Amino acid sequence: MDLLALQEYFISNPGVLWVVAAVVFIIIEVSIPGIGGLFSGVAALSLGTLLIFDIISPETFVAQLAWFFGLTIFWAAVLWKPLKKMMMPSGEAYSDIIGTTAKVVSRMEKGKLGTVKWSGTTMRSRIIETSAVDSIDADQEVWIHDKDGTVLLIDVSPIDTKNNS
Image (tube, rainbow, N blue to C red):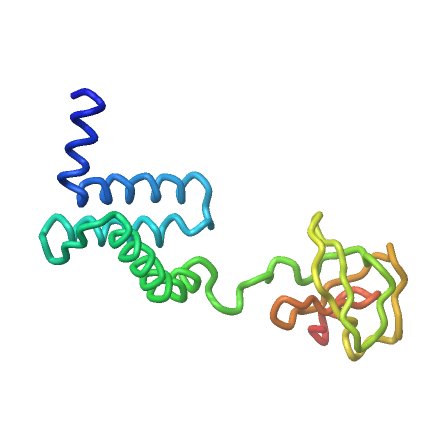
């Protein structure tokens, strides 16, 4: 099959082209996770299926693109939360950080947000309320006691295992 015949085939069978696009999007998602290839792949597969079975029949490529983007938004809205829960069950985010040390990026004051560097990553942090210190200087090593969402709760002293904080 030459290139011209392949082009003619896809023009006369746009549903097949969308199914091929779905495979490409899913391969991209597997290769580079987190860029939305899964939602685009499911949308392209949905559109291809709708076209193959003549459930919809948008005549122009622009109309097909409108369907594709609409279905991508639909599948992202439907699948986002279930996939997020499956990938990171609640309560487990950053649980491996608690009890480890980090380095303060710039001077921090109690009651204000600051930043620490943990494992090469800069993260938002706050001095715990029960800390004996009111500020922590830059480059000082601190202990991560807990987390509040994505904010790390830190102190200059290690975690007291008797009191769990």
